View 1 (tube, rainbow, N blue to C red):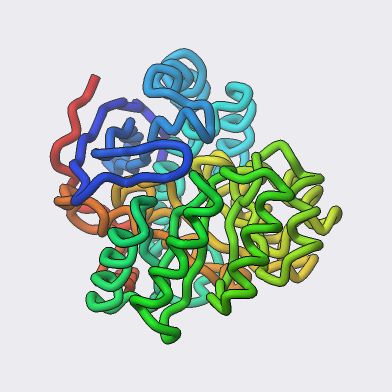
View 2 (cartoon, rainbow, N blue to C red):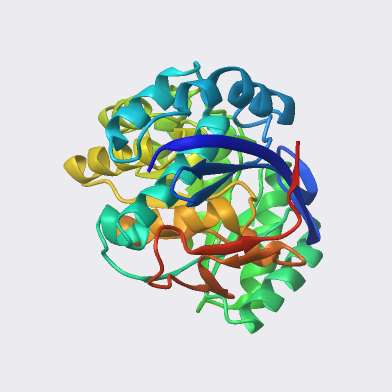
Length: 362
C-alpha cells in the first residue's frame, strides 16, 4: 500500500452556539482536511484546525507546510514501513504540529485499513466505549448556569467550565453553576492560561472555601510559566491539569519531573498526531500520571482519531472530546458514534470513515 497522492481541502461546519474561552470566540469549524490516496485504492483522512492562539498554526501555514514540505516527503512511501513514514513526517518540517497531525491521522487511518482492524485495537484495545464531558463557554454567571443545567438535562454528568477572563467573576460563575446543577455533576474548570499564578491560587482557594467541589483545573497560568504552574499545583488541593504547556513527550517529562502538574492533557494538534501522543502515554504510565485526551474544537474527522487513542490506553482516564456534538451538522459518514456524552467505536477498519461531505479541495 504505497502513497500516491495527497489532496488538501477545507471543511466548514457551523456551531450550535458560539464557543467562548479566555483566548478566543469561535462560530464555526473552519478546518483543513487531507486525503491520502494509495495505489490500492484505499484513502485515509485527516484534519487540522487553524488554532493560532494555541499552536501558532494558521490555515495558510498548515497548507504551506503540507504543500511545500510534507507532501513531497511522503509520496511514494509504503504503509508497511510505518515507523519510517512517521520519522520522515516528523522531520519534514520543524514545529507545524497541526499540519503533521492531519497527515498522522490520515496515515493511521490507512494503517488500520492495511491490517483490516479498527485503529484502537492496534493501539492497545483497552475499551471501545468512552464518556466525554461537555464544554460550557464563558459568559455571564446566569447564562452559564442555564447552559450547565441544560447539559445535565441532556445526560452529561461532567461539565468543563471555561473561566480565566475575570477571576472575581469566575468565582461567581462557578457558584452559580454549582447552585444550578447540584452536587451530582462533576465540574472541571479550564482557565486557558487566563490567570497569573498568585491570582490562580487565590481564586482556586476561594472556590475550595466555598465548597464548590472542583474536579480539576486546566492550565491556570500561561503555557511558558512552568514555575507558576508548579506554584499553583503546590498551593491548592484541586488537581492541576497541564494542557497548553504540553506539546511534546519532552514537555511531559519536564512537567512530571518538576511536579508542575498533577495530570497531562494530550491533544493531537499539539503533539503532531497519534505517534507522539502514544509516547506521552508511555511517559505518563512510567510515572503513574493519569492523562486526559482533548480536542481543539474540530470536526468528527480528527476527533475520531482522538477517540481511538483514548479508547486504546488505560492511562487515559478523562475525556474531553465534545467537538462533534457542538456542531450544528455532521457531514462525516462513519467514524466514532456520538450519543451526547457516550462515544462508541464501531469495528470497522482504520477510523471507519465511509464518506465525508462538504470538502472543497484546493
